Image 1 (cartoon, rainbow, N blue to C red):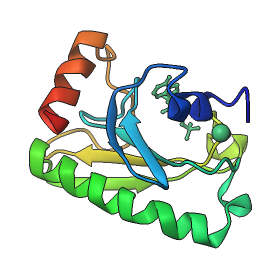
Image 2: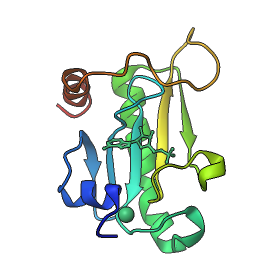
Image 3: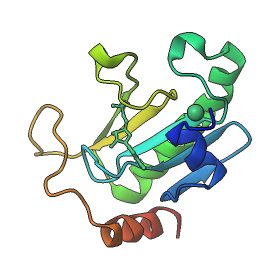
Length: 134
Ligand code: AMP
Ligand code: ZN
């Protein structure tokens, strides 16, 4: 837990582009997004994967997932939004603290899942954060 990247972000030891926080959840922009506005929502409770997350903590984080999804849709005008949650290296998990990917989807964009290239700059991400929560 001490060395967990997302626990450090939640504690503010590593900076992030915060979008939302409540007692149970913390939401911030993904720095290597699959679409403009790609946001991660994480439970404050440290669990590596969905399997270890107590049901009451899962219930605690889901309102933040919905609220953040609604914010993204309203502010960014995306036509759709994908919710993704990966468990295990074979599923593509790289950070071992449960997280929900909220990926806005826009009409006309290519099918499938590719990171935006080039990735957004820190200035781009800060501007997007202001657009979402300013
Ligand atoms: P996953 O592959 O489901 O484990 O997703 C981990 C996600 O965390 C990836 O989409 C990364 O781009 C993202 N990520 C890694 N480090 C950071 C960070 N410091 N701030 C924001 N997002 C990050
Ligand atoms: Zn953690």
